[in-house]
Length: 97
Image (tube, rainbow, N blue to C red; front, top):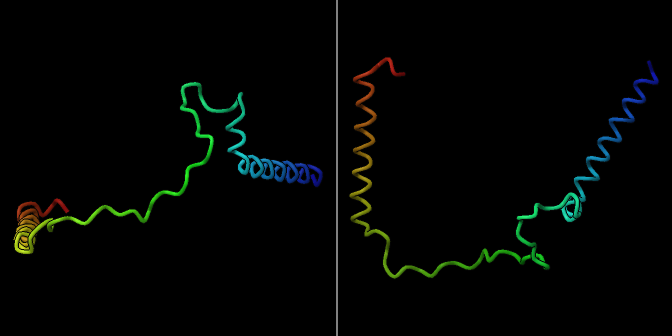
């Protein structure tokens, strides 16, 4: 019985090590001709791309998206619609909860 446990433990350790080893070199496995990318896949660039331009911001707008008066009006309308929707289902259908 002890020999069977050792064999199982060794097999599990070998499986774990092989999974870790294959996970570490997955990019080189993908480049193999037999395992690699499908035939209709686009060609990879020769050099890896640089970092994305995260600090490039779009230019500022010439005018505000909404005037403060328009924004306040829309907020009041949304609050009124929310209040109407909150009160209507509770009064008509108490079993919907």
